[in-house]
Image (tube, helix red, strand yellow):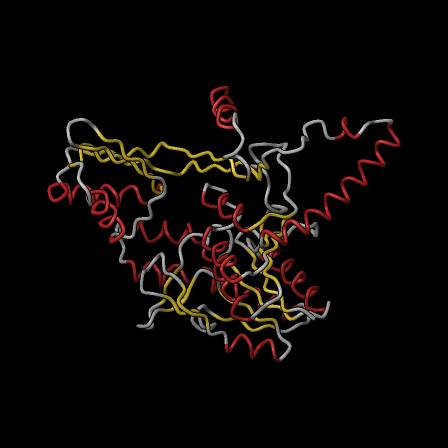
Length: 400
């Protein structure tokens, strides 16, 4: 018997029929002799609809009230899923984030988990029931509801799996796993059977939407294996594991592939060189290509070029809750510097507000924020020790 935590995203519980299908899948896992805890996201576009409703009433709603509103979406899906499991002949209890013991800091909208105390979830599992937890949410020390930000349900699932000492955390979505590129853009993209935490962290931070970055960080920190799968099929997805486990698993898959190649060679009079024309004795291993078209680029111009100025700029942004991604500083001969950095597109307005307010204090000449910026990254190992990859990468961008 295994303890499995399953997470189902918004597309998996988008409507009543989808919820019933998810309920059947959970019961199948349960009937196979496993204990099952489930984390769910809000149905379909519920979260976006709630945001639109809030903004139609107040263009700058209070952060506390927004979090109170945002938690409603997951509460709806968790209770409907529990009802669907009951209707299918099994038993389930649903819990909000606070009822499941998710304790967070007080940063509304982007709260971080401080502790998970899943006592009620354990009691439900001990009774032989399925425990269903609303993802994306928790409670702070003051008793206020908080949300974890975009992708927070993934993080909730991993945190619950760690707290319960689960055997694995399964992330169900609308794709068959992690691919070498976005299959909606690159039809020839291939599913990656096994990937290590480090490569997955890079892909998530560079724009891959399959898993939230914080979810992968949490899994790596506690060594929790992840399995990204489709809720619309029973095909194998992508395992995300420590590097040594990836090598062991990949070696087995490579052996299977080599055996398949030998059989093909015998049947088709092909040589192994024909089957593997690009394999040499030592090549860089590209895990995939990730992209993010929602970045904004901010440039602060003619900042006094003295120690501590960059620290002041980024401290002010941090105090405003802005997460900065890439940073480039270019010095000029005039004793000033330009500092450019990227932020999520949703933070562009906040960056503009902070820089306008602090311009006199920081003493820079001007700034601009460009929302029409994209990021493309090639992720893999061995790239720093092989020349020509950057040239090939930029040639590919130039050609397109």
